[in-house]
Image (cartoon, rainbow over all chains, first blue to last red; front, side):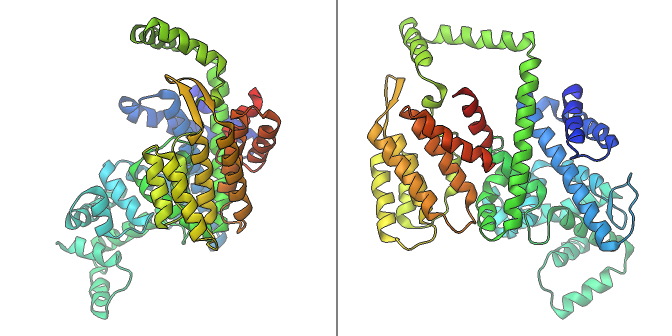
Length: 149
Length: 306
């Protein structure tokens, strides 16, 4: 798997979609770490790898885009190794922290921020009480705060 | 509700009263609560993109469109994303870009799996074949093999997944009843409802959705087989399907739904294949590949085997 992931990201580097060769190693390691974390839940390895290669690349793309925007906005150079997009904010660390939340908490956060759903709508979709969804949302923020400290 | 929860509740509100603003300002002078505010803001920055669709959400949508995701969140948000596409050229571009990235993953994986096929996968294939032999009566199996050999893959299934459901772009009563009829495989009823929708709403901008679904319905209606074998299609229905898809393309002129236009070209190509018109099918498949539509990869694969 490491070999396939590495050659996929290397092909992106050769196609000039990834500018830095160190990123090829980092992205390969990310796939490997995801595998180590999720291997018990994987049903079809081929499909899992398709999905993870794609999502890993998109995350990297998102991070790079945010970094470029930040650099343009702030007109300062950001240290390459940290990928920080605002004062002290490490994009990669935040994404990983978010991944560690329970599936249900992630669903609530995503429906709230991605879909602009009201808590009552989220509750209806997830078959829960509105108060319970709100509580879970607040706890997720606290949990993330503790993970990011 | 404790104080931290109260603060998050206020941070999450769109508008605050003067009293709430004052409460929040006071609370945030406490460093611990300030950290809560920073975390909330960072999470929001992480997932929101100034009124546009976040890249990760778009990636999930691309997976969903390629039948690679059935996650609850994306199923719930698919319609919202499609509504957003109607007014946002930037997000439509992002979709095209990420869809093309996904196609490159598919292509890469397919090439690698072909060259690195291991003994394990062969064993797995034999295991499934053996299970089939045990489960199916010998005569039926014989017929099945004959049918499989004589029926090309593209004739075995017209629809690629159920993703035309993401095109529930119209709310009219007849359109929805048409979709329900399709769900129940009542294709004659579906044709009737969709035609009524078309007649009663001639001037509506989104009418091309009805023609698109009508195209799918006609082709499905024309499907014939013998005990699930020897798939064939009624040519008259397939031609009506092609006409409906063409009408859908003709009416889809706003530039906001180009992806559905390319989907229609893909289904026209598949419909032509069902009636053996390979040159016409190729023409439409090339349009899908050039336009990098949702079915870009599948169109490319079909072009390779034709």
